[in-house]
Length: 259
Length: 333
Image 1 (cartoon, each protein chain N blue to C red):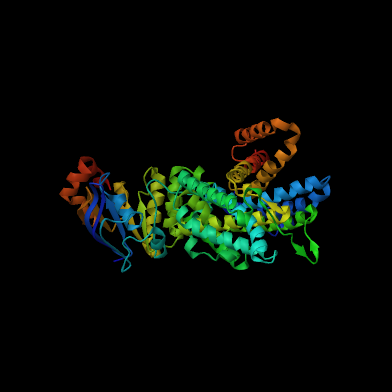
Image 2: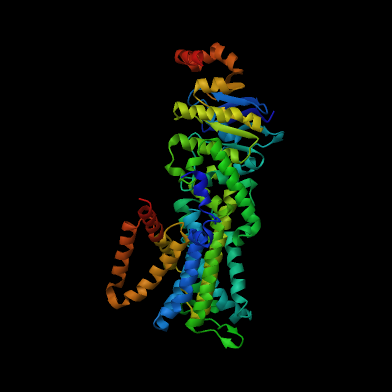
């Protein structure tokens, strides 16, 4: 298990956004987290990645207790994420965005930077080459030198995935990577995610696009009102009457039927 | 144009040779700056203009540093004249009261400024936006009040004399001599600033400017980088202050005053946030204009204000970035 959550809880004033959640993510798999809006999915990601400090429970990552650690420390340990509402560096080029993802793998000696020593040049060339490769993987190589803030929405989504991959995480958490993307873009994202376990990246995925979720996931966690409603393989979730009643509804039933 | 070609165009290619190398904005800009610094003193008609050029260079050094903090990292400081003043007064106080050799005073001064910036920066930089502006403003006021009140050490509002530097038996007091000293410091300061911004540090700073949380999840220690750039910008200001003191020979508390802090920020914005060469232009305009506008007597401030307003209306991103953008657009219609 790469990630283990134990009785995790997050309370905002009187509201329990996540309540007593225990769950584990298995190494090398794609885990999806689904549930209606406000079910606590993004809150869960924010706790796991250190943006929120949970008000109850523990988080273990890669065998160690990481509860309450800041995001940069978790990144150092091999966790990275993307954001539902995009956290792109808009004034930097697409290539530079992905190079920021290389941060932990670059020469970070400040004296090398100040005097531009030869060591830095090698590190910069390597960063640039790797970033270009990743832009190619997500289909953005053509736009490498464009300011990221001027990219179309779908391209920004994929740019964030490339940036996160540049960090070479063990666990990558994707918050609605396909939201707002057209069919072609969604298919491209699907392909990228599908290839991740082979690169040694475990994936946690929040997504509303049911066909995408059902196709991709090895395991699904269903949240409702901050609690675990169900978990299991895609086929099990698809048939689970609680899930159908609480979340998927009749419309959802059609969606999974077509998936 | 394919991405590979576009990326390749930024580096010296075999085909481009020396010309390609010069065309890179970084190298080309540095060469141009070097040429201007070399030729300028021979074009200036008299000593008055040389002394204005020295002041431009000193302010430019402080502004290049402040631009790293404000323009690149997006953190405001309304107290940088505090560091400028501390650097200046170190050169006054250390030799006069503590018997430190005058040549060593600026070095100690800059180290002290860096230390103070480190200590002050840690708590202050947790604040954002207006709150950070208020906190840095408070720091600047504190320094200028301290300098104004400690008469024993600083001479109070009347200011104090600074011992002249003596090198190889010559006392350095001529504007022409100081021109070359300031020019070398400024050139090195610009070189270091360009190096920094074109490095992982620079990308981390620009990244946290756009999205702190985005930077953090990618492993950027945002608090540490903010502190780093704050200390670096304070070192620039401290060094500029020290040069000012040694050049002028007389220092007064207004060196550390609020107005000077605002002037520094205005120079950054006027030249262009996040443009190192813009900082030079901003400093040059705002330092030399008041000197040249003195012919207008009482209308000086009015005209200066109008010029500033016009600049911000017609060149909203600052002089250098806006003009560079227009040039590029014309070249590639």
